[in-house]
Length: 334
Image 1 (cartoon, rainbow, N blue to C red):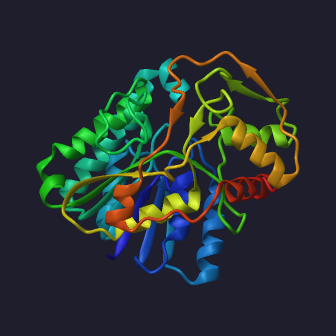
Image 2 (cartoon, one colour):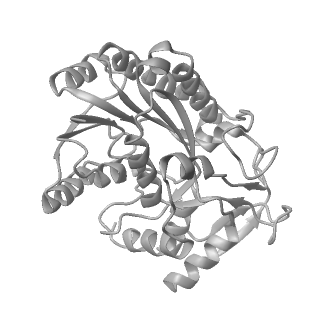
């Protein structure tokens, strides 16, 4: 491998992935339009790379709809691998603005896929999501579970997966890894990078952090009467560094064709489990209030990660305590 292009590389997952790349590449090119990220993340990545003498790291402010600029980046940097993270990711926003999600996620990705074929990219990672499964028919969720996405965000992920699965180039001439994430939380061990959302956060951990920092008065828990051990919804939380380690394993898996892997822990924790663990580990109060359920939320969602474990050698190394501790350490410095 020579040089890699990371789209959305200053976002939460993309930036941690970039930080984890060591000697796999000579050059790392990050493109990001900064719509939900910050240039300060690149400065921190540059510090981490220079400190550890890792590969050349460059940033280009660019939107994935700008096919002309993306093409120049691929052509003149001799890109041979792409990790595609760029896109919008809020389920709630996608319900309000479905056409926006089709434009940004689906049409933008079509540009990336066209260029990947034109320039014969041989290694491609796509950032998908467990939302493609919809409400579970059975648990834990494996990769053979029916695809039944129930929101526009998840539908864009399904559509992109299908573009990859049904294209002869990606089936025969490229090593494509579709990675279905569960619920990444936590932050980089340096404390320099973590989850930084613009505007009001949608995911649970960033909301907990806002409450812990007294920027919000309480966490609203949507539903306290589910058929779970404490009545609150259960999800599969995975440390961001375990998630990106899964990406490194996938990057080094060279089998031609399209392969799909769940990246989760296989362990479900409830909303109250997460809040109580955060409180205990960090010794900070997190007030909460149980309110009505949200339409479409499942009681429990957690992964069967055995395929990634067996084929990629993927292994989770961090527990819930570490996820909560690392997230809070980062949050106190932003």
